Amino acid sequence: MTLKFARTPRERAERSLTVTTTHTAGTTTITAHGRIDLATEAPWREALITTATTPDPTTHHLVVDLTAVTHLSWASTAVLLRAHRACTRRGRTLTTLARGPILSSLHLTPLAQELRIAPSTTTAPTPHTHSTNAWLIA
Image 1 (cartoon, rainbow, N blue to C red):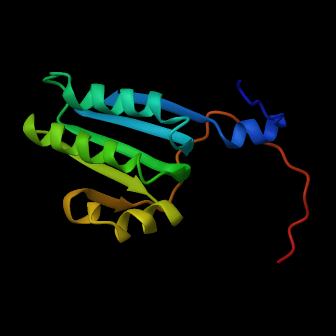
Image 2: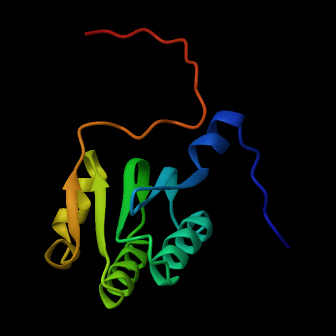
């Protein structure tokens, strides 16, 4: 028996993940938007590991942009480590861009000793827009 919970469109959007891959001048960038957890990690993991392990003489640097990620599960961080090691074996570098809670979480783990983690002050462009009606009280 499968349990299904009704979710509003906003809740579904908050629990979704969009992954884009771009290649420019020897650098491949994998950008994620949304939550990365056990339920959503498959497309991100596939893009990251495939790019890191595929022989490509035009890719010298891999950038993993997590600036628009709202949640990164602890189990999903293992994908970053596997991709980093795959890049190292192929003579490539891997840089992870993050900000906010994701950056703090990565720096608190032993991954910070092995991965190249760079703080980002800008957020990756969002593939879709959200409109909200709310008051901002400063």
